[in-house]
Image (tube, rainbow, N blue to C red):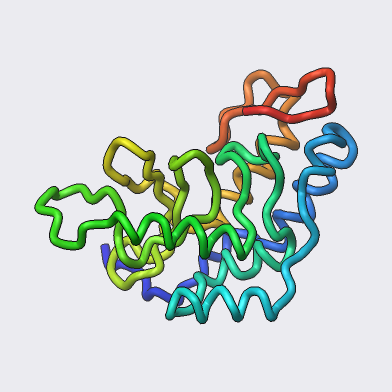
Length: 192
């Protein structure tokens, strides 16, 4: 099978803004505390400042997600933990890059030059691969003690669509989607 080009858009994956609309609607109705934890959209100037600090453009799905919500507060509304704001992305990446060893002989790196953190906390970060190659736009996870690894999501858009579907099917015990069914607590928070 031939890999699709890097700018390929899978027609089965909804636009990021569409998935966020579904997530927002569900959270507002069923988990108002989690909905309230989501921050307002990022200002396009903050996105431009983030890209300038990185030295390259944000992945398109991350840019679109930031234009829906510029992060959220602990514990976060999604299964990846709190989403980072544009400011957080810069700070977390700066920290990661300050201790990254580009000549590390390990086959599985602790961090890589074109990994963009988008969610997490306490040194455990979910990232998007912004570099060229077969993992371009894929989501991964790098904790603070182990090596980074790709988590099977081809794009942030695919992940957000999976989250929307899991939320909408929460009451179906037999739902077998790509994201585990969430649960609700008495505080009006969703947890995964």
